[in-house]
Image 1 (cartoon, rainbow, N blue to C red):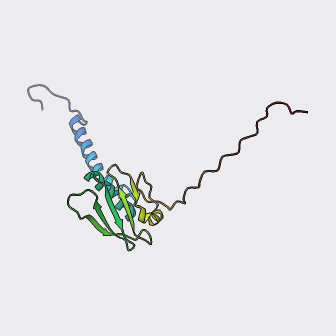
Image 2 (spheres, helix red, strand yellow):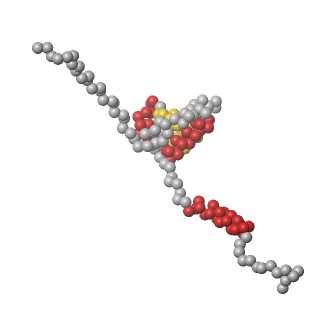
Image 3 (spheres, rainbow, N blue to C red):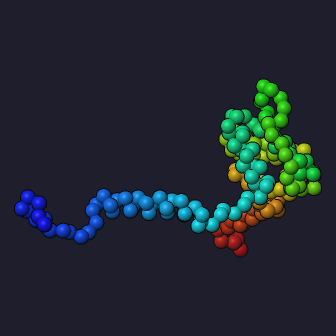
Length: 159
């Protein structure tokens, strides 16, 4: 049956709007499902997480932060130039070594172990630029002494 005397042929297919709606739905499903499929990131050791948090606290506060860890693994974070003295944060981790250690973290991200606890800090093995704990490193070997100078000849030997 025609309406108005004009017959339009019926086309089968998909409109552009329908195609865009389907693509958007596929994108939404992929965004929801992809994080569940991805492998979880490996867990960081507690000492590494603590050092990262202390570096962030030093940078955020704009001051040197002391991270003190005693032999039992109890730790506390203190600000060096804080107008209100006291502990910034505290907690408990697995003991990093047999003796207490104090790590000094600067607001620019570097760290060092203070002098009284340097021996205990060597057991932790902190990289001073990244403040990441690593395997204990042996102390650096001293440089080799320079070789003696070679004798200089001044001409043919006298006869």
